[in-house]
Length: 305
Image (cartoon, rainbow, N blue to C red; front, side, top):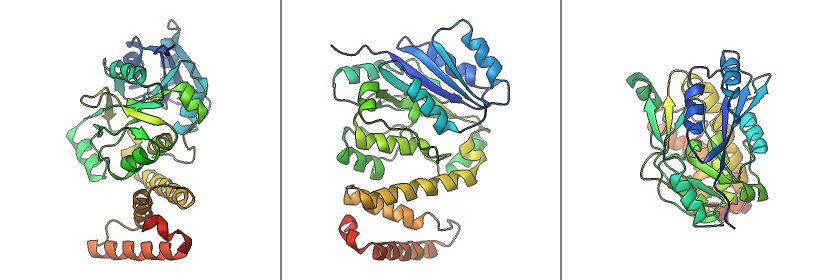
């Protein structure tokens, strides 16, 4: 008997009084959403009061209060453990779902009972042109319309890591809970940023995925002046370094494809190089770091060549 398509939506929030009503309303309006788990991650603004008011007459909403700010990874992990519906989705507190969010999702899961997760397109809206320029200057990808890649483990993981030019956004991902529980993946609490990509890469190794609605967006990511990715560039850089080092170390111990191994080696070798150096210096230092790293692991030559 096919699973009834009913969804738990996980919304972590920290000082999101300005946006949280809009996010909750966008999820609450969808018939497929039967449960909305909101984790108030130690907010110090009016968020807690707003959430208490929202939950008063809405049994669909489940509220979890963290007394101190523990980070979005801890909050989402709490949501994953609390979710009770057959399917799980995510929404950031400053973003929104569109009315078509789960239409193609439900169809995609119904057509393949081995599908562990579905990914779909999202779009970005910038609060102003200055933020858009800063976002692009910071090297962030503005496309969340991914390629139609489907598969299981090695092949899809290789394409996801090395070929896909668009970023998969968590707002467009839906998990089938029972298959996720067979090999549960959680958010890395040591990553203050880049934890979404880390989570998605882990999913790609553990479960079959299928593309859902990728021709049009199913959710909106809002870039505003309070986005951490723009406000705390030092934290973003440190998190990316931890993320790349983690996956490079994993590549030495696991059977990833040579293409993935070479990509991770290059990223690891270059992640600490000052991007403001002249281009020729960057290329030279990158080559030196790669050769030095390969020489440290002579038993792993076949992973790169």
